[in-house]
Image 1 (tube, rainbow over the protein chains, first blue to last red):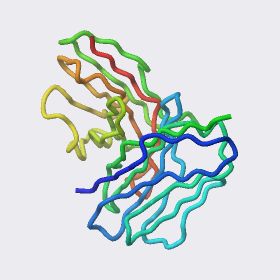
Image 2: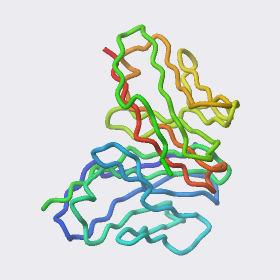
Image 3: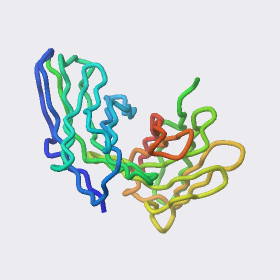
Image 4: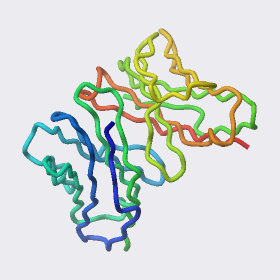
Length: 114
Length: 115
């Protein structure tokens, strides 16, 4: 069974700094999808970034980028120039290529300090 | 284009009562997924439905929980004889086609509190 592990329960950084959230996963599959979701205090789940495992190039969305290391089964999220609005829970997630369910990690609570 | 809608946003029930959670997918979406988030946990998949069909219910508890997505109207997650352990946030997501090629868009969730 696939699992997703986020080893940092909570992090705090100053506004405008860069922060990296860690994620590792376990799967025997070679093709799959990885995601980072943001859950702000409103509790709404917002897709931040998505990576297809068969693509070598790391996905980027504005200030958000990932470091995808397939052999190490690592999928970290980097937030550049962090803003107060980035304060949220961040969930790393996995989906099989032929699957229908998203498997989530337990999350990292990120605080951006003014 | 309205997003995924869930109601109620908050629901309080006493032990033994029934809880009905509703999810209206995004316009044109015919695939619905239900997830449960226990306090301080990530979301856990419960069930995947298409119109009038349950496709994957591997995450549904065997008893007291049921889900439907009728031809007309919202998807319903029903919890009979609720217990305190059912207190959680329940999220619905929808997609246009079968994931993972299509993004699952999440609703705002229903917070269920069982007293």
